[in-house]
Image 1 (cartoon, one colour):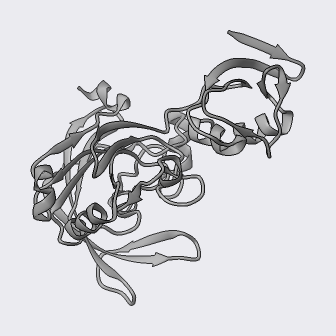
Image 2: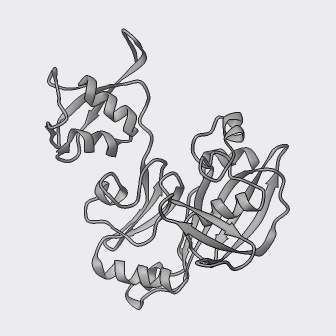
Length: 285
């Protein structure tokens, strides 16, 4: 149902049952409202319980039903693919960090991050639920016995055949970005990625990427360096391309995670493959 307020169009009403005790801001972010929309809801006091408007410092409690007015639907921040007493495997959405105040760790009490995806990279993510599992998973990632495969939509028509693409990466921590070089330069590290073209379209293509080294922004920066920027990538892509395709988030998705080897206690996870297929990739199938 849509509601119209003076100066604001298409306000939608959401009735939401609270699942755990939390502050208003944490609830709105964890439910899937973006930061700008959350700020707007709080500023305008567009959240009510029992007919009363709630303020930022108010708490909501498990079992309550609140009413929220917002100009857009909340996005799915994550869904659960698999869970047991040791691990939880998620399908991560956009616009959420893995660690920090507004993050997967804060949204899932007791969870421990063992690897990361960029804020706006989506897809399969595994987290530990106890310290023993965390240590085992971290060691597996360190030993490179966890295989992660990504799928992305790039601008252009590459002809990758699964060969290893090597380059050198330099991280600029002050600017939160990296630069790619063909040869070794001071402070650079070797990066290796297997790219494979899955399907070529008129202007864009579907490409898979398997990380052999796991460096910051490796896939995004390396593809841009090779001349095939990811659609929607505001940091390494091209603004005119992103505007043309009306994309504000990078089309980069971890679609497969497979644990090849892990500590004996958790060997039941070995050779399990967790898969998530993004909706936007279906146009290529």
